Length: 184
Image (cartoon, rainbow, N blue to C red; front, side, top):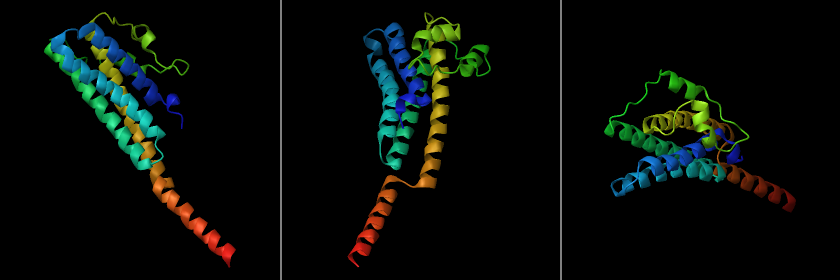
């Protein structure tokens, strides 16, 4: 499986890039240093754990890492909500037309990250921290939903096909049976 073709990876990349841009634009100053580190590391961790999980041979490890990615994006979501709350800015309601527009957006397969088009496809202003943070909140909700679906599909695959250790053990038993037959 090529992780670069996965929607969860492409959206994670967009979220990571946008988080870097948000922090550089709105979290400047020594008093935000720790928060910026936490936010960028949570965004990076979410993206990188998808990569590491998909590259793992072990289904168990893959599932665990996808779960870690999900948790990292949950942490990042709370940071954006905190930013809006502390700065007395509004968090958009899930039925807000802006939220619905973002939820309806489909990732462009030919563009590995849609960050360059973020303001175009949302028709919102990235120069406003309230808009920018709310866009990211919407994208993170979308990402965690997709990660939940991805996790479910990996879990189903594990149940139906077994895991790495189990399949390796089957190959070992088959080898021993074949080797024993050749000796007799």
